[in-house]
Length: 74
Picture 1 (cartoon, rainbow, N blue to C red):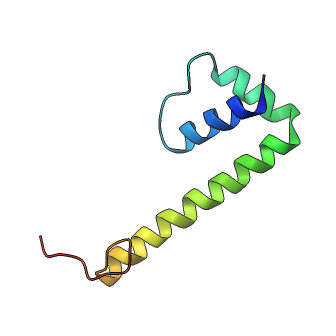
Picture 2: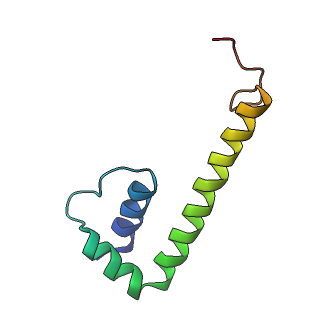
């Protein structure tokens, strides 16, 4: 399978979305098992996703929006 399709599937999985058509969970796992470049891409994408989530949590705790501006009252 082409790495770009696998990376799209990894991204979808990290975002809680369905895998793209034509990519099964088994195909994804098999490709990641055999492709060091895609495994590294998955690790980096997961780290970025977690970092962004932590930024959002810290903004909420500080009373700011994602751009660092004061949050609007509800």
